[in-house]
Length: 64
Image (cartoon, rainbow, N blue to C red):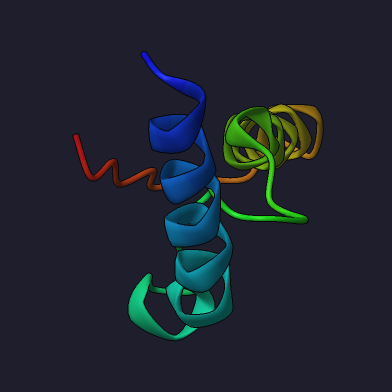
C-alpha cells in the first residue's frame, strides 16, 4: 500500500469517528471509543454470578 493511500484511509477513518456513535446502537459493545468488546461479557457474567449467589432465578437472553 502506498503512503498516499494510507493518508486517504486515515482521513476517512477520522471522518467516520465523528458519526459512528450516532449510527451504531448504544447497546453495541465494541468497535467504538470508550466501549470494550469484553465489557458486555463481563457484565453478563457478573449478573449470572450474583443470581447464583443470591439463589435468585435469572433469565439470560443472548443476541447470538
